Image 1 (cartoon, helix red, strand yellow):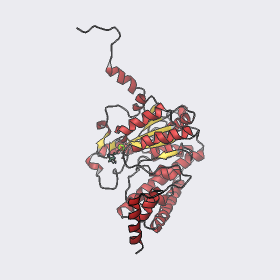
Image 2: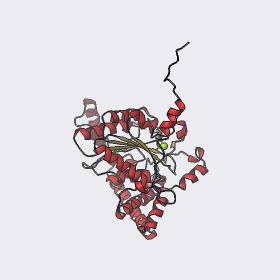
Image 3: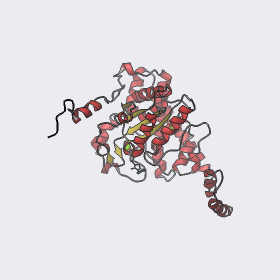
Image 4: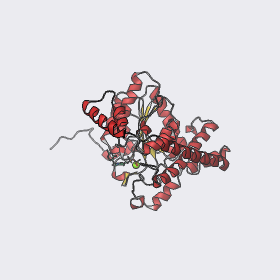
Length: 371
Ligand SMILES: Cc1ncc(C[n+]2csc(CCOP(=O)(O)OP(=O)(O)O)c2C)c(N)n1
Ligand SMILES: [Mg+2]
């Protein structure tokens, strides 16, 4: 018979419950646009609050227009963003321009507000390489299509910033599905070990294409996955722009002060399909669930808050909608005017010096393209 030990009473249920109770959802604005957490209110001026609203309204229009441009065959790959505006834009709003963003395919809005010209976002959608050619001073990497691959890269970019003594951070975005990838754990662990100034945002929109988050993981929250990496993690109401901003700003401050990385889980929802490639959300989501989340809408909530403060009104909003439509029209025109991409461009952009086999191919394509 095994000897009884005095202190070995181990209660696995208690252990998990104790971890999970530390990851209550952080919220500042409730669904009615009322402040429910005054102490956590971020220090934003009225002009800054309006600017954040402007970006959310603009981005909602961009999403609607992108979907219809895609249907007309004028855009290519497109992953809808409506519903995720607070999660995407309020986190980007907490950054400085020298911070690096390593986005996923759904994160084009953050890239635009970090400085990517709109016509280049459209070129990215069309698979044109110029969409991924960032201007020298633009701290953006191209959107990653391979799920989770940018997590490890972010740990590396952040470590590089630290080694160079920069007071800036690397931030990355992935989804609930991305948090199931091996790369996710490696990236968090590495960034924790080196106390790299990284922010890992998991936009938990509850589905990885058609797979619900409950089937992805036994963990009660994604935020708690930070614990095993020895870094702070927080679950945020991702439909609440102020909470997302505050959590990201705090994470940034800790990172630049040498206190290492943070994992932020934003609870959000995508109203549209996964991408415009043809999935049908009605086959994996109920209309009850859609309705439940649409009631939490980030624009509605923030609008109510700003209107009560007397800094936003319908006229203001209509101005933004018109401005967005005009910008989109001009950007599509500019994208249309770009020269078609050539195979020789792709080859020469990839290498400083061409390997012999590509030299041969380059010559063949040069010949073809000259005709
Ligand atoms: C490594 C890898 N596996 C599978 C895919 C195919 N795929 C594309 S998107 C996606 C779901 C991702 O879901 P999630 O991480 O929750 O992000 P969301 O699209 O919801 O924003 C999958 C499985 C991929 N692109 N890369
Ligand atoms: Mg998802």
